[in-house]
Length: 166
Image 1 (cartoon, rainbow, N blue to C red):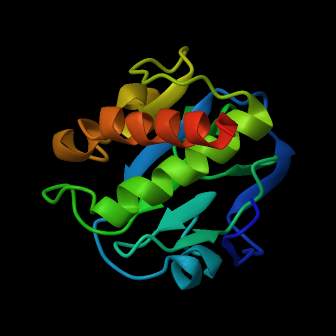
Image 2: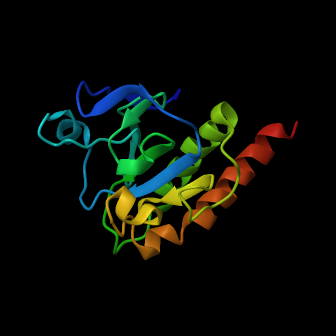
Image 3: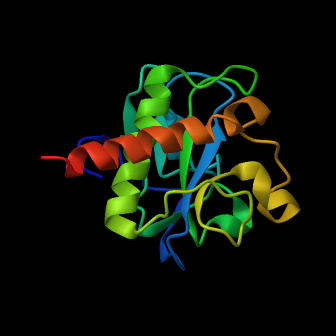
């Protein structure tokens, strides 16, 4: 993705192995600070395509054509974005804008639909929790952040509409 800080990791992902482009999965970090060092450590055995700081900075660790190790059975078809902070805190306004920016890019480049989904078989903006046991059985990103997906999608629609207006 252009305009983001690219910090490719050398471990904890699989080159290729993507079956599709269903959309973007929202995650919560349960902590703060860049995940580059963590995902670069071989013993971590996890990764994500993108990370968004509370200030809205975006780092990309894995190409969306490669399989990040984020949501188990969901890895082949979904792109992942970790968000700094905790499930008990809402996404900051800059995070909402940054996640929307990633989604706008995915909609343009990969045809992600402008919708929210709660099904692993769906398409759009989903959450880690929607995959239940097959995706690791996590409640990530938590109810508070999951409810913000409509706000993110509103920003996506606004951005796409304003870029078409002369």
